[in-house]
Image 1 (spheres, rainbow, N blue to C red):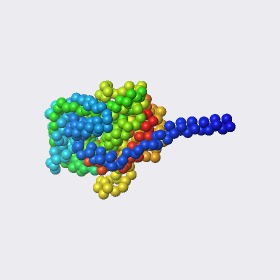
Image 2 (tube, one colour):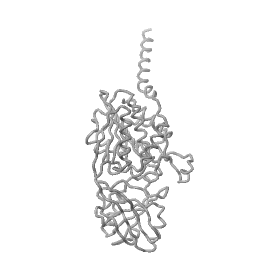
Image 3 (spheres, helix red, strand yellow):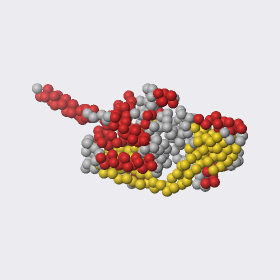
Image 4 (cartoon, one colour):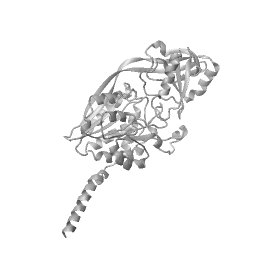
Length: 422
């Protein structure tokens, strides 16, 4: 009888432990697709989200209100910087104007931003010419070292301008994240819709005018920081970038939508302190995350987990623009989205995300994006999303490139993991 009683007690204790470890995590009220969809559309409607612009300011105010409504104390951290106020960028040819986008940062000298010369392939170009290079930006956010070298070498050889011809699904120009320390030369990015026109200008050996219109102005971007102090011994951090080159519907929208709903949910769960931060300056060297790490981030030693809601968490993998226009069903961007995580969360990552179609990158193998900033700051327990999709960094990246419905299972997986630290 005593043995049976001990066995029964042992089984009861085991059941309690298992329930605490696994059962509690299952008892999560799923975030609703409709709420996520509304946030996706709200974010995209704000227009371009370039740091320091109207969309940046509108999103700052909106997310500040959302966090206050969820019960957080809100701080808006201002990060001053000098911004390029972009007006237009184009190549004027005998056949017409080819509209594009500048590589950030354009030269400070106005004379270097308005140049004329014969257009030639960069390998064939010489002093006074405008050189052309072609780049497929698949899986890129910034230029590669090899591209930077080509630009620097062109400047050394006396070229006056560079055209980067980007191959994209829609033919639009791709926007590369800002580059510090590039050669002082005007760089215009054109989409593949202009490939034929550029080929003709090269073949005709005629001069063209490269123009980058705008000016440098003192500006600021902002971090929206929500804190909910509940006298917990540990803190859970959730971060997402708010800014990007264009409307960023599926690039930034999913992270922002999840950020809002996770804040509402986490505020009523557990007793850990919460820090939710939506950073500015992502596309210009992560200046918002850098500012937060220097002033505002919690102690790594008392941070139970850090969840970073990065780029392209869930998006349609459209095969072509026609499929998008028709709204036809498509696969998700499973081959081009990653979860980067601390090794101590390997089991949880595979358990909750394997069936959702993510690539896995343990931090001891490869860490990139703003996860690299979190890892470098000494946070020992974190996971972060990063990735791309067909309309990534393109002007037409709108809310229809993703959906609230496809974010629901991702939200649930995040909730289950977070709940163990709350």
